[in-house]
Amino acid sequence: MIKAIIFDLDGTLLNRDESLKVFISEQHDRLNKWLGHIPKEEYIQKFIELDDHGYVWKDEVFEQLTKEFEIEGISVHELLEDYLNFFKENCVPFPELLETLEELKRNHFLVGMVTNGKGQFQMDNIKALEMDSYMDVILISDWEGVKKPDSMIFRRVAERLHVCPEDCVFIGDHPDKDVKAAREVGMKGIWKRNDQWDGAEADDMIDDLSEIPGIILQFNSISNGTL
Image (tube, rainbow, N blue to C red; front, side):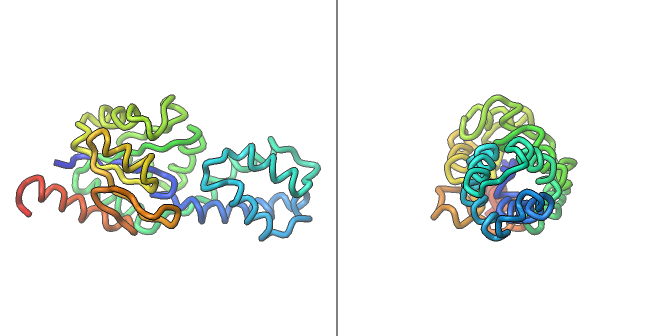
């Protein structure tokens, strides 16, 4: 019986690709004194390329940008600080985010989150999307000292929710770090489809967050033998 729904953040609840595009455009405008010699579209495309879907930390991204575009008068540290301070203001949620969380809570499910990343940075983004109040627990790898796909962080979130892993569903966009890893500890895994990967071995797949409550209902109907 499913009692808890646990989410990844980036690419699952937070539309990171769109958020990043908005941030980069705003940064180019905000720091135009130092970045104005770079065509905006060129700056955006190079940033996205170097970022590699978030798998390259931004100090490396800004260091490379500084070299390639010969940025002067502003340091890599200052560019990074701008990212840490302003990215949260550009967070774009996927459609039906709060409506889906509201429905899950209304139906008395526990709701949690496990995300890799820097602690305060990720928490700022969670709060910017106004979903922290819906979360019973939030585990961020930087603060936990362990990150996905390590099984420890999946077992830990179940423990903090006071449920068995078998009573949990994990929803994420990464076929291995989210879905496969969650299933290996006994959770059900739902893959949020995206263009980065061709597919995933999952218990179900979604395109939209609004599909989740119906899938959970189906899981529990099967568990109860009523389907």
